[in-house]
Image (cartoon, rainbow, N blue to C red; front, side, top):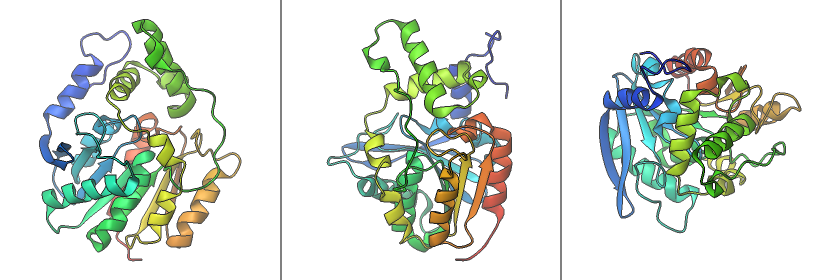
Length: 292
């Protein structure tokens, strides 16, 4: 499937994302006063994908179809995001994980599955893995928050919500993608801008407040599945320079001494910016069977 690019109006970003969504089976499970939405593609061992803060299932738009050639891919809109209902108050990572865990069990029964969580989804994924115990075959966290470790100070993000002009909003999203999500500004194209502007508008959760805690670290103490970590070496939240990834590797290996650590030449949104290398590395991890 061809992605939208500048100067190629025959396929828009919305059409591209919509075409991938159309290939999925949509599944709804209870969430507060409404439902949580999962989308399922492919066949094979189940893999649950959990998006980042201000995201949606479409954070994985460059990964779903390659993964679905080998796995049953189940991508969530987490509670309080995109098409899913609000997370009941008071908001907590444990409460969000409980809804997700119940939902995936409703879908899969007692079948084993792997969890792949990006950024805020990594922190939530650790909590889901703790709650689901030995039903989880592998936990992979990507640029994860919630580890209770130092992170660099970021440039102030643009407040797009205060802007009425459409062009100003788009430029604010471009700036924010460059600050936090993508290392190479040339990768901030039509698809990235569409996903950022669409997903942030549907976000009703303050993920940053949770990501700055040690919720993932505490949950990892109760995770029995093999653990792996993936980072872009230019991740604004944990770059290679300064030893931030090394510190995270040391933490993961304090829980699982055999934890695999994958470093890829990209920014925070590594699965989007370096999707080819990311997909190859993730598939290899998911196919590697080992015990704790």
